[in-house]
Image 1 (spheres, rainbow, N blue to C red):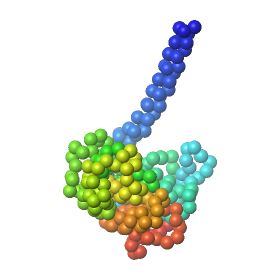
Image 2: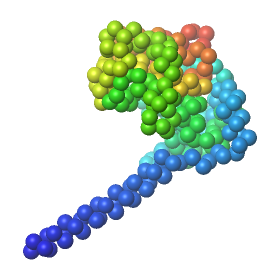
Image 3: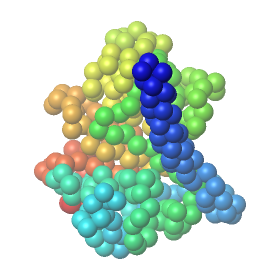
Image 4: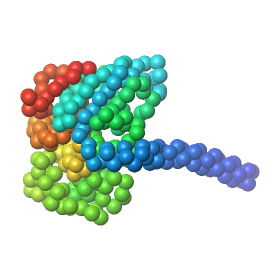
Length: 277
């Protein structure tokens, strides 16, 4: 009986092992997706050396794989000029965040065409597109259980697991100042070596967002993407983050997603081109 139970447990372990192996294979496929695509040298060099930040959605339609019968976007067309700031407003489920997800090529099963500077984004190297061209600040930024310095410097590490190997500390401080978090780091958190805790649990929500914005700036992206960056913040924290965004979008293309359909406030009036979803 004991032997039978032993072999039963062993068989169960092998089953779990093979299931985990299959899941790992699929995970690594996702992580490696795009490493070999967009390998046209001319297209690659042109994209890296001459990025202006012009974005075009041309008759784009999309449905999530889990809900193939429900279109989130239907023949969506718009154009964003280099250095233009566009504010996508609208209620939940209208497709605002989907626009950002498609830009970063998290989904490829759309119809129509999405271009960056006239080049189809599917022809561009995925790792470069996500780590060098675009930088995302989301509603709940992912901070690691390390120092403030390592979290900001990670913005330019690409796929390196040692973001501190080539840190430009002066640039880190410049980015923190632009994000209105430098003084807080020095005077309240105890300096750039201060540990933020797992997922930033040692600092406030507004401070997390500003560290995330500093990280995005450290990557020096041509296009800054902000997806509901203040939806989880109180009024005072939201005001500070909005001031931070106004400083950080200058000189680059930016797309800001918000569920609030009233008012502006994100950018200077002359720059805030709002699209209601």
